[in-house]
Length: 104
Image (tube, rainbow, N blue to C red):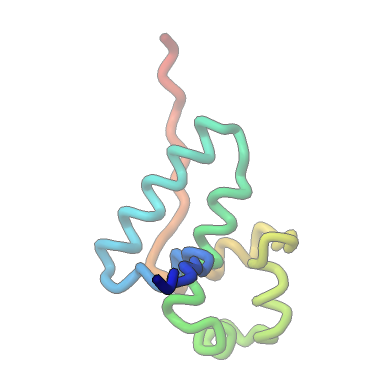
């Protein structure tokens, strides 16, 4: 009996994002996770994944940024400036909003 070798590829969020609702749901969920875990890396990774799903080269052109630099800054090892994050979010149709934390 021949056994088939099962392999798994890394799951890629960018491959799962197809609609505006997918983007909104992803951003909302990841913001909650980033707050819970006190780790902004979740949000930065999600922004990078969403940007890749739209097309990083297109976003870079629209923002007049270098594509390679944008890829690097939104990679897991990247450290994008706040301005870059704001520009990419704006390009994706989002804005940041601050709200007062509710005390328990």
